[in-house]
Length: 84
Image 1: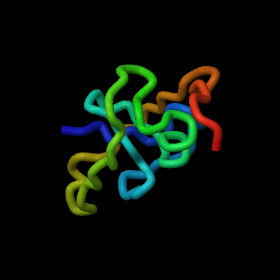
Image 2: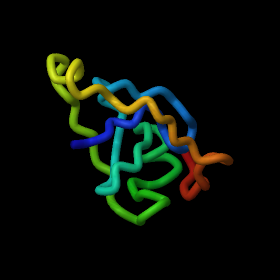
Image 3: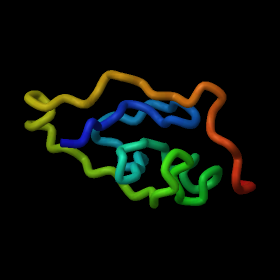
């Protein structure tokens, strides 16, 4: 089951479980759409994997299987690999 991490690892922006702006790689590294496209060009800086839209968990399942509360920001943010 996906952890549904609550924030972007680059900018620490909140990404609630129902966010359409959350993108993940196959290791569940999580980024907001802005960082994923502008800074990372669609590639995870941790594993080199493709960043895709994170599935949204149905609200009735969130009660039993809540999103993670553990925030995982990169200490100095992500490297800028592309200009906006």
